[in-house]
Image (cartoon, rainbow, N blue to C red; front, side, top):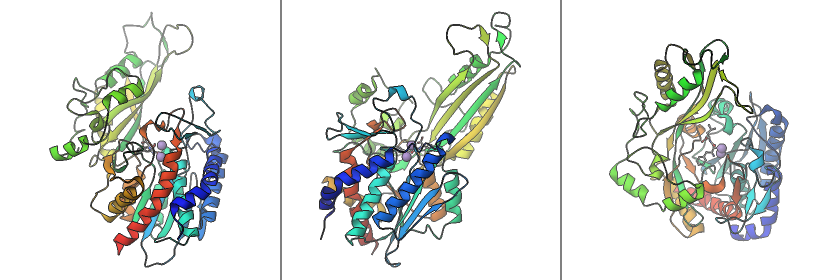
Length: 462
Ligand code: BES
Ligand code: MN
Ligand code: MN
């Protein structure tokens, strides 16, 4: 019987070239100027699912970008795997920091990817990782080794909050019925330390507008006698953390899950070098909540970060002016049990309450979502763990991630199934940043590992 290893050897150049074609289309969901490219990408994904062996593939229209849905049902008695991924990508700016254009993929070697990595926006997040599933399906379908029914749902709005996908899921529960959900849109510790993501943080994202006087003012004539919206906004933001870097919003930590000493000790066993971490980011020291390690701070603890701040004069030279308005965008990463809508409300109430009388404050909530944890005692996790053992020769480490995929909690709520997060990217792959890349090793290792997940999931389901 044909092995996946042989199949990859025979087809690796084609697999790569197909992915490169997909990466050339700038499917940026945040910017409506790329609408046609988004639609074109959905078409390419549809064709790839058809040629991989899906029985039926459709492009499902939504109020936003379409969802590509495909399936291959071989036997209703077999378990069904639902694969989710996204074909949209983040904007590529700042363009001048890319060493090669973001939508002209090239292969370059890096320290962590000595075999080469594909440099392009979306290489890792998520076109490259999503495409591993298409190629794994191709292998299983073409060589008649498919042990499960498969459904694919690839969306085009993950990077802007999956609003239309949520509606689609709620309206199509029967169609999407499955025994396990499989996603590759996260990372692993390193190429020789495989890990499976067992947690995602939730998210609350808000935008703030602070208004002072009804017009921009001369900073000499009025300076000192009125509240300057930028001074006020920055002071208010600074007050959101105390001297221990705890967040000061009343009630913010009420529902935070506190891990036991055993769980924290288990987490601390994952290999991590603080020296390498600092060196890679060119920082003298790390910074964060007192009492927690770097890995805890960016995975099991909630955070509050300014993502953007603006107002006043930022052109060349100096203009003496007090701006009428100041703005900021703030993200709060949440941990399991914190409810994102409740946190958004707590934030809003607190932020409004600390504003001095001389300004008005508006808080506009953007998208958000709940966190998620995958239990490691279910057959989905076990099947994934066995798959990694087969292809990496090592037991993967369960690890919580700091990132968010809000739709995962909704899948559990609506479809009542668990999600297994088999991510093959590295944190250093620069997703959302200039020079995003995805290792060739990781791309092929993903394609190799996925069929074993299906095999073991089918076996363990019996
Ligand atoms: N794939 C990422 C999330 C991710 C990356 C999770 C690495 C864990 C490890 C996803 O595309 C993403 O960027 N999510 C957004 C949230 C979304 C609502 C815009 C995020 O985490 O900022
Ligand atoms: Mn992603
Ligand atoms: Mn992303």
